[in-house]
Every structure is written in structure tokens, then in C-alpha cells.
Amino acid sequence: QVQLVESGGGLVQAGGSLRLSCAASTSISRFNSMAWHSQAPGKQRELVARITSGGSTNYADSVKGRFAISRDIAKNTVYLQMNSLKPEDTAVYYCNYHNSITGRDSWGQGTQVTVSS
Image (cartoon, rainbow, N blue to C red):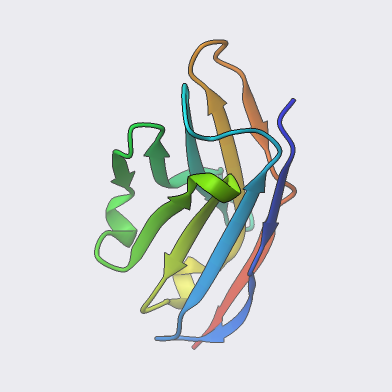
């Protein structure tokens, strides 16, 4: 099981920015993808952004042009830069590590992002 430690959530006004970090207990350089998912109250968890070990990225339509996922392989850390935040971005954000060989997923504990109008 990969341990994931998230940080960077908080309260911000609409239009503001936050950067989330997720530190993994294992190398993220090969055979995996890492992603951020969000879960708003009463809703299902959904994908926000993903980055593969090859560096490919994909985003939910709702965040394209506003959010950017990146990584520091040396630090085994993935980031989510969140700009132009909207109240509807309010959710708990979870970091996910997907092992491409075993198919197993690991999840962080979640970090709360609240955007006030």
C-alpha cells in the first residue's frame, strides 16, 4: 500500500488560487499514474486531473484552463495548481496513486477546499 500525504487545502475567495500537494511513499517515476479526485457533499467522487508516469495529463472539462497537474519525480510529489477558483470547486480533494502493473489504487486522506462567493 502506497502512503499518500496531501496538503494545501483551505478557504479561498472566488477567483483565488490554491496549490495542493501529494507526497507519495514510493517512486512515481514508472508504471503508475497519479490523479486528483474531488468529492462534494452528497455527490460521487470524480476525476479532476491525472498525470501518467510518461507525463501525459488529462483534465475534467470543468477545470480545463484553470487547473494544472504537475509532478516532481525527485520528491515523489504531485501538485494541483488551482486558479480562478469557483464556489462549485468546493469539495474534499483526494490524491490517488494507480499502480499500472497490479491495478491497485491507493488514496490519501483528503484535503478540504472551500471557495467562498
